Length: 342
Image 1 (spheres, rainbow, N blue to C red):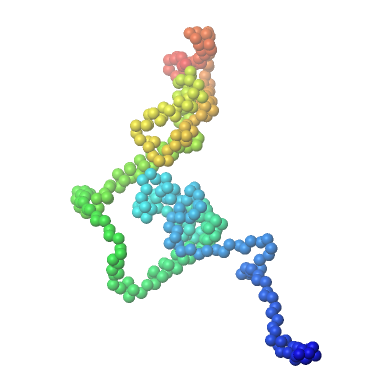
Image 2: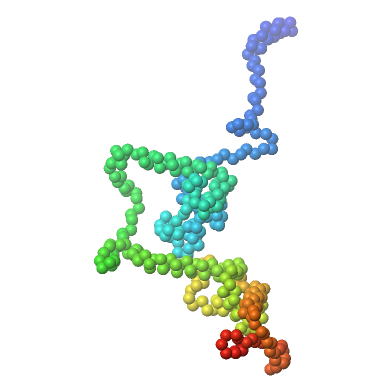
């Protein structure tokens, strides 16, 4: 075929080729959009609030990352207890969780407001949970339960599945209780026993006293606001003037440990010897208590000697190894016969 024929054929087919050719435009760039505003450069989208069923949170310890001092009193006592049962089987009232996240702000007692604010702040800032979501779902569940029709409650009881694990046999025993001259007999599991309210209260008081003693022995430092305790420390140190206060700071913990060792006071998992050594007064604190007691004695003596004629009696110094001069204050008593008060 000549060149002219090829050129004519190319021109004839040029229109068909153009009709079969399609032009594809590039795909538009995808943009990450928030619900209300586009994401700008360098900005981090705000984390979305999550709604979680309240069944996941039954106690303060179920909130991940929540510090122990922010928990309620019941959860703190449960964590500090030595004999732990499963939390759902713990019956004492002192170890029950307050469940502040299930209450609205208007229903929270003033004493629990700090705990309620800490729980809500932790849920909002750390767990990204809306504080009102648990309360809303709880109200919805209660409404669902209360609006059940009687026909639903009259259904036949569900039969246990064959895959259910067998339960252990429960042994019972009979306990006789006397009240107002009458005797009552109850069948109780061998793991339970009925106590008088006074006896149960005495056991609770003994337990609380033991916990306070153990907590005092594991404190990071010693402190007391009791004047009686400060007086006793001062009297104990002045009774042994030859013992230096720096020596007493090491001597006192050893004496207390040796005295209470046979009682089992320090036999529990959380007891640390290093913390026990720091739980007693230092030489600086003992010196401070001595100064406080000297000040109190001087003020009492000054109040006692008001409107009295005072005489000063002193002995010579360096007598039997005593280098200082012995000084005594005396006064005449105005009541009754003349008596010299020293």
